[in-house]
Length: 100
Image 1 (spheres, rainbow, N blue to C red):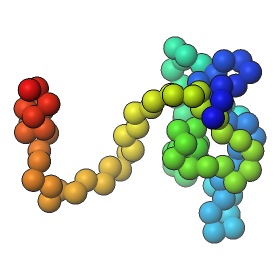
Image 2 (tube, one colour; image 1 turned 60 degrees about the horizontal axis):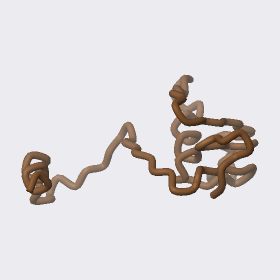
Image 3 (cartoon, rainbow, N blue to C red; image 1 turned 90 degrees about the vertical axis):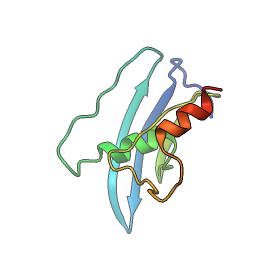
Image 4 (tube, rainbow, N blue to C red; image 1 turned 60 degrees about the vertical axis):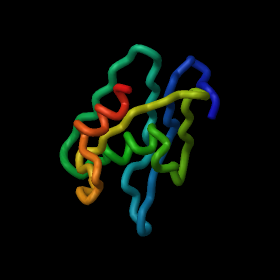
């Protein structure tokens, strides 16, 4: 996606996401420029994670638009991370492999 008019790295314009006929968030406007730190604050169930997922491109809005600067790389760790504990590789072993 292309960069917004103000040089934003991430933009949501009147974005909304619907699931099972119900709006999770609607009418969200967000612009994040280089060097900015953004915090989403609100009570449980208010749409913070949904808004973040739209901004990151994990979810696409059902209305409005979401855009990210071309080539932008974003790291994201969800609050509830699902890990397959059956993997035979732990963090220490992985770090040893990448140190070579």
